[in-house]
Length: 365
Image (cartoon, rainbow, N blue to C red; front, side, top):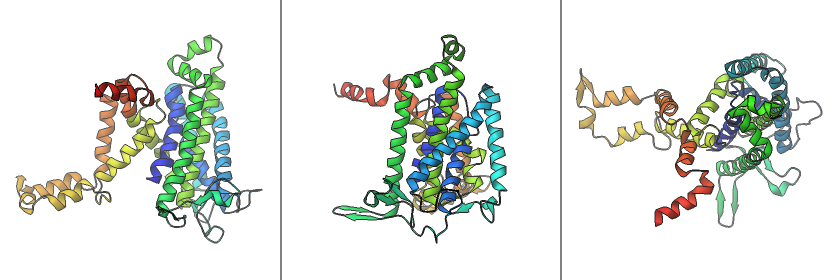
């Protein structure tokens, strides 16, 4: 579940620019990967002026700043185009960064496989909390994080990681919400609805888009830093590859474009469905349940051309989670264009927080 938080934050940063300005950034993984690589390199003492003992939260903030600067550099070129050309040029930049980082020997002995935190320099997990105040920090990580036992609280290491990463993601979400509900955010929506009209009434749309891209890149960098902090490693394929941006797009479409929180729910939906359809189903997948509860007499019943029910189940379910997720994606695009959260908002007539109390009150009458 911790992964849902940090990748959900990345998907929200993707929605911040793509859902509120209408510009699809297919190269958003660049900022996610930049944040991840930055914190690992700082921890290993490979960034000048930043010692290995730099507090993790300071590294996270600087990772966000680095990603924002990258976004400004890429956006200053990309926003001269629009539509599919913008998407393609951001994808092109992302591939350049991906290939460069994969072959940059300064990163480590085998950069294609990624880099990891030195256990000698950091034998424990990274601290999340208030920098320089030890009492207000807890280490994250499934193996090297902190566990908490205090009064009635009994939190394992994974629980502590879940809550601390979730706390950072909540702060980031509230910050993005504040920006989107400001006059600046309303200009972004005006650009999405009709950019020529926004320009005609006097707004410098290029600067607004560039600023939004920088803010989006900042939070994508923070998400990547959290990802690397929890895993203590990062590689080109799990951070910089263009399919990472594709996952954010998938989460945004399922959760709802232009809803900000929707991509988080979209990613949770994706992970839940993928787990339910997986071979092992650690949380109780469909295939293990069928194997356990369907009687042998039923599994052995032939249904077509000698194929039994059991063989059919194995053929259609075993290892095909991605296939069914693809079908779900197509269904959402065709029949649920507003995504999960967008559809709920449309039904309620506004945001869930504002309309749900009235809706529930009407149901009680």
